Image (tube, rainbow over the protein chains, first blue to last red):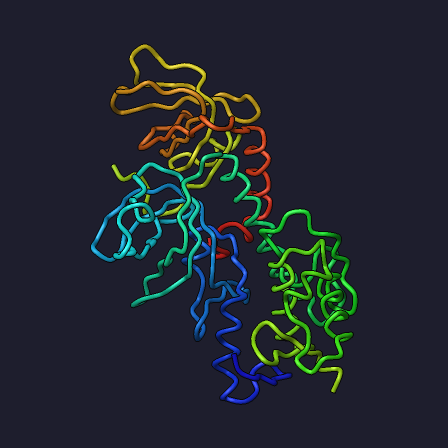
Amino acid sequence: GGYVHSPEGFGSPAGAQAEKKKRSRFQNIVPCTVSQVLAAEQVAETFRLCDVEISQVAVVGIIRHAEKAPTNIVYKVDDMTAAPLDVRQWVDTDEAGGENVVVPPGTYVKVIGQLRSFQNTKCLVAFKIIPLENMNEFTAHMLEIVNAHMILRKDLMSASRVPPSFSAGISDMGSHGGGGSMPVNGLSAHQSQVLNLIKSCPVPEGMSLQELKLQLHSMSMSTIKQAVEFLSNEGHIYSTVDDDHYKSTDNE
Amino acid sequence: MGDGSAGPRPRIGAGQLAQHIGQHVCFLGRLEKIHPTGKLFVLSDGLGRHTTVELSEPLDEEISGIIEVVGRVTNQATIMCTSYVQFREDKSPFDLELYNEALKIIHEFPDYFCSPFG
């Protein structure tokens, strides 16, 4: 919690910690190839690939090697775009069996994890490792990668100029059936809707994510959160009593 | 012989074998037939084009369905296989035609698929 008023994004130093915590919770999961992960450059707390920030990523590949240690399992995941990537998964030492069964080499998996670099070597710290049951997901992942990186890079180029011809803002790769996203005033339709609702809220503590979800039936919570993250970073809104409540900066 | 697994193995269709002679590639196709010696099998890609895959040792197991091969392209535009894996289709059939479409996309937009530096 904590009251953070930072219209420029990172205002007071006291607010920076809460800002950073809120920010990392809302990160998009960007689908990537191993070669993209390896090519990303570390910039402060995060990584950039062609100026696109990547932090949490999804990679699909085959397990070439698996090694279990007392506190973690280390895999080598290969998607043919580069050498196999180190993937670390922490073992829950409290839990007997279940969660931390070693996935055998030769299995195709989807890994969702946090990009990390240690002594110039990249690895993924995995939140989830999911063996693929339907191999068409592997094909879909290839297409999602091209789509995601195309949108993310074009967003950067056109942020201050003409709105791009397809979905603007932070793309919601995991969402299904999102409505049309014709950009208006540099904001996508989703972002505009969220901003307008927040603007219209009269109470001092602003509008909560839950209230936004109630009003925006067709929008998934993750889409709402991404819109809130974008609007907050752009300075249109700020969080009030906690990270779930927001007011518009235009109301001041 | 190295299997090239320290570097990229581009995914290609049968039509691109000639451009990758001597290189390590990744080829995905449906098993059409296995030679009686077990040292050679034929895969068809999403467009029905056939590719011959050679092995240094005969197959020691039954394979069928969708096979993903990593290997080096020979002068004859066959693939000298260093490793292969059979795609599981126990829950859902694999759409090879869709994969072929995906190949076209990743070759049309290489900057958004591999690292932009190569």
